[in-house]
Length: 354
Image 1 (tube, rainbow, N blue to C red):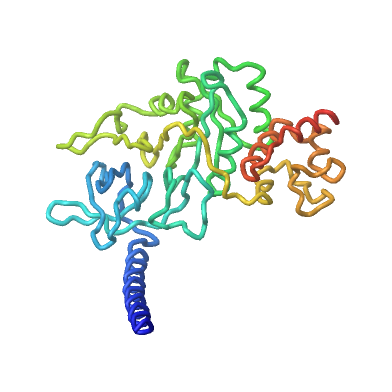
Image 2 (cartoon, helix red, strand yellow):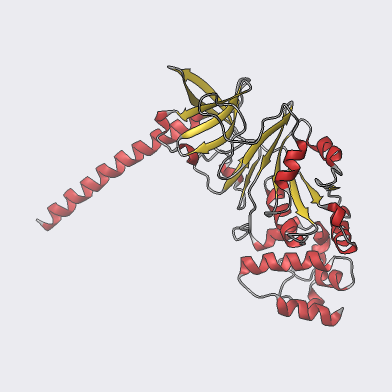
């Protein structure tokens, strides 16, 4: 009897497993059908609130829902910046297709094999042409740690980046030295002041005709820069009217602004930290172009971390002043997060040799 019960239990489990596999196959098929390579008629997602999707379509903000056969919650599927095909059924808009995403910005390392994973977590925005890392001189002060981490995430996502120093009217020699580090790395640095309206026209030149995104800590002036870009006929700040469905939508994660023809800004909330824990320690140096001579280290798998100075060419470059010490400290902090190891002793060792 025990064997019979075991067999019956096995058959039941096998039957359930087959049903689950069939269901999963159906879901996968639905997902594959949902994502299309291109479309000439689409809207852009401004905000997703649970199952309500707000889309700018034909110069109007409309509310849509996800097609039911996906069996998914909308805010698990679509994100700000997504391009979607809409159909109208009984005066209601339905998202029929998601157009394949170009570049995705998330709080973690992007997995290129899951570019169109409709359940992807940590996504900030999609289809980004250029990212502007906004920093400020004061409140909060300029710190390279934030810039370096964002440069890593953006490079991993294949998103071109520029740096915008806001509140430039408060700049001192200290901030100038930090910015000079990035200029020497051939990264564009724009200096702006929304208080004195400095550098706004230069910023517009880089953003014209692009879907851009502002990223940065709270208080650096992302929203002030956005307001400086807006003109009288831009999509304005404020809640969307339930009746007219017109106006700019404010989302819990990002804000979308159309400031000129085919020119938009996604303003993100201040992000306190970026998760780099899923980066491979070996690949981190790829995001530091100063480490181009790492092949001169004694060991091919050198992490430029706890290895002795006489075997690490990168440490020698830091000591000799060829690699900026602040950039190397950023590297050590990132490696410390990944390896869960302290780095203070490494700095003490470097300072003794300096």
